[in-house]
Image (tube, rainbow, N blue to C red; front, top):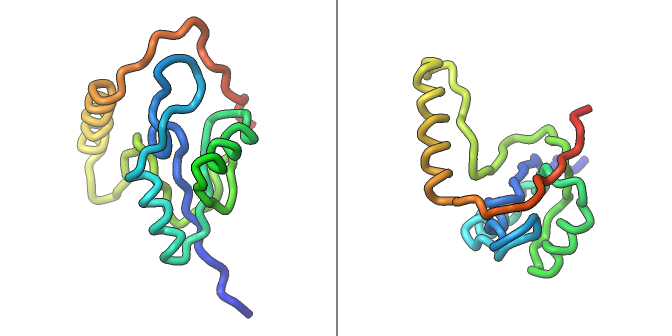
Length: 130
């Protein structure tokens, strides 16, 4: 019996595509995110795109437009060996709670400085949690 490939997920917004100039559409591809996705696939991982967006067909269409090959697109976090995201803090028993929270604070400050939010009329609606 063939060994099942381990799964990894990669976030869509601000990991595979840039913030659009305005509105809730899609921005230009982020090459480093795409290269990381492609390397994981080359190393044998099954890669799934994870997004909070509800229109998964629009995400699939964007991926196809840029010839980005993935093994799935979902808005529900899949069981996985690892995840890739622009905003994440790694939980660790070796780190203290204040150290981990400081990482969150630093990340939010860096993110706010490097990803200014465009002005929008309405806020995007997300799917309700199950």
